[in-house]
Length: 166
Length: 187
Ligand code: SF4
Image 1 (tube, rainbow over the protein chains, first blue to last red):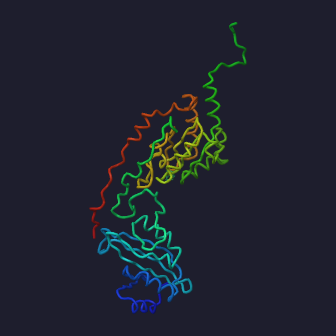
Image 2 (cartoon, helix red, strand yellow):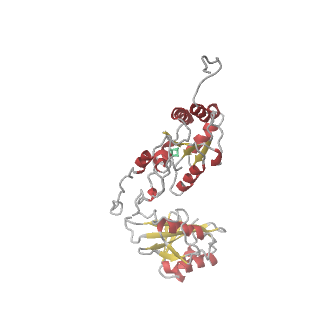
Image 3 (cartoon, each protein chain N blue to C red):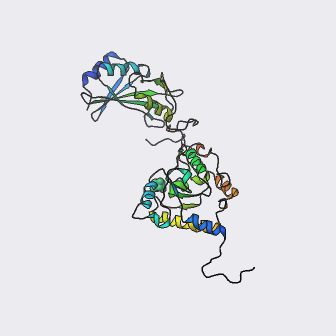
């Protein structure tokens, strides 16, 4: 369900530089990285967006009309009114970084670890920012668009067991 | 005293052949089923296809009790050390069947995380093509493996795969990496 206009109006009056938009009944708000934590805190505490559905990321490398490299998306939901809101933060290389929201939603812990693992977005203040899916010794962030589909030889680095040794 | 004529109910054989005959008819598979091929593996063990007819129905989930590893499904980088450890935990003599396109070659999953054929890292005795192979194909693979066990002898269980052969597989290079960073999508 689309977000009530007064919520968006309240956000716009409170924070400078945020850009709301709407597409087929879905509300998106693009927020500067520095204000992310404040915006999400307000949304959670004042406007009752109590559920963090997902944290994910899009790599806009070579995307038409894109001006920023990464877009980190926070999908929020208000479980009372069934409103859904997408918050987006645009980030650039080098060192894309944004503040962690684990202090607001415990569930963001693993979601942010996954985004770190796959895209290399650094979440400042995350209690335990380790890889979650790939092996610890993996060095790249494979969902970035400039990462080759077949990898950079990661599939090779294992000992070979032969009949005699097995 | 030399025996001139054997009684009718005595058959002369070699100990090696007798051991092979015993082993080939009581394979204990270790189901390393990681993906969709595992479903066909289960179907093979179930009553309709009845793997028990070939003496290989006793699936055991402890590698210590198994002598036939059936790798059914794709193996990712993170899983390969597990696969190798389980292989090492199995007792000699032991055999390995690579079931399906993914286990044998990586199949359609030519991505950074999927191992392009388990035979690059562990020895494989029998490959079964298909995506997924039908239970009949798996049964055929097991029958062929039984022939192989009978023919090649099993004492020591090390006769199948020479180190040189393993090295040759190992030296297979992957396809050249496609460079994507210069690509500009059309507007
Ligand atoms: S070969 Fe086909 S059926 Fe078997 S694991 Fe791969 S994709 Fe699944």
